[in-house]
Image (tube, rainbow, N blue to C red; front, side, top):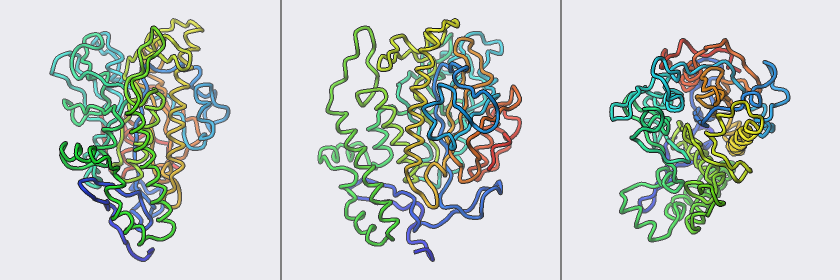
Length: 449
């Protein structure tokens, strides 16, 4: 099949109102290379970008590698990522200047998330006159969205109000929303895995979805005949990839179904039960990670944002023996016991990142893996949560970006380098030529392979 394209890049299977996008197959052929010129003329798959956000900063002593250059011994918070050390880099020195007050007083948590992907100063209001800026993911979605069924995917684990005062006079929308289609149009995130799954794989009206639920048929059941017909036309490698993909879809369907059968768990006395489905916070995060992987694997979208917890979140973590709320602990006052607990929360979050990177790495695609064809940015708009500072942010960049990124390093940039310079560099690895985004001053250098 190497001499011609059997399938279009947007091929899908359809049945009884369901739509199932296919994984990237060799039969779909190559794409053109990155406009930056650092990659070969052809590549096996498109580039993707994902942005993961964690709130309340980090215990920076346990986050920052001791020296610049090749990553050696990882600090405590990064240790869960040890097996992926060659797949990511730590970027030190980046600043979200527009998260600073600039005369607006308190509200560092709201500004931290509102400015993280936009590089724009959020307007201080708890009314309807909200304003920030277009976020990097939506710049990519506006230019690339026509190439995929979904222009972008916005996910999270904590629901958040889209109005009201949540942080010193700032609307709740700022501390719960990462993605902005325009300066005045935030995009709410979906926290229910079942609804994310339906958005990825279901089509038709609410009545159509209700009918399918009543029939208790899975997406794979609904497209079974098309699936079998296609599988008979593919080469052995593509058949194996399609079977692996079907297994992953079925696994997620079963996990969502199981989660729906269990009542909401009762947390230990004095603690709020983790919100959402399924029955544990970690399982919720990991199910969302699996959905992100499927979204990229099927080329349903190439742009995703994932807020692991809202900015300023005071969620307790009793399952890792941290009874106090995250936000309360972040104001540690240099109390060693509180800083130890913050580091434990930080390690929990990086374990979830390690899970996502492992899943992306497990999916073979072309001459590499799905992780090779991704850029995954992970970080927070606060640095030290106790100080509410927005410079030297904890930022990690993973994936090879289709050969445009060299990983396994600790890169130290000049202080006050705009975080948006990194977003600009990522956009331009998505076959776009973007000159300005928010407060950027130019593309971040020294990332290339």
